[in-house]
Length: 204
Image (cartoon, rainbow, N blue to C red; front, side, top):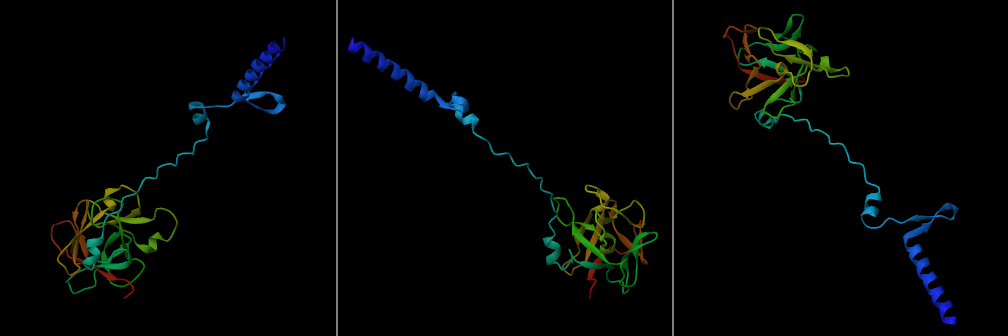
């Protein structure tokens, strides 16, 4: 009789221990299952994935800097070797080489264009880019002169290629519709005129 009682107690203890291994007490005296194995892994909190940030390309202007072409600075864009002050200027009739003095309208800024190709710039006159927003860029046209318009990412007319002309800091300015030529202070589409340009620091 005694051995039967001890046997019943042993069986009851084994059942109780097994139940404790699979459950934990919760409020109200009830038991909740403890996740184990794959279930425990899936129940663990996961860190939120960070959104990918697209990197905007920027044209490499290193070669231009080495050649003495002033990029990233306020400059005058001058017709080289003509013996006159013929500076790119924002005027009532467009953007042309009519400037003869340092003014807000002749102050230009060559900024790296948002493209992967080398030596590509945006021409952004600082005076017209003081307000918030995308700002203003000089754009090429099929005719002449050039024009000033709101900057637009991906607009090809606003991207100019600076082509070095020797090692003296001179260069040609190529727009979407061809090389910029200047004849007697005006951009021309006749195929005549000078193509050699240079930068002069505005503050000099």
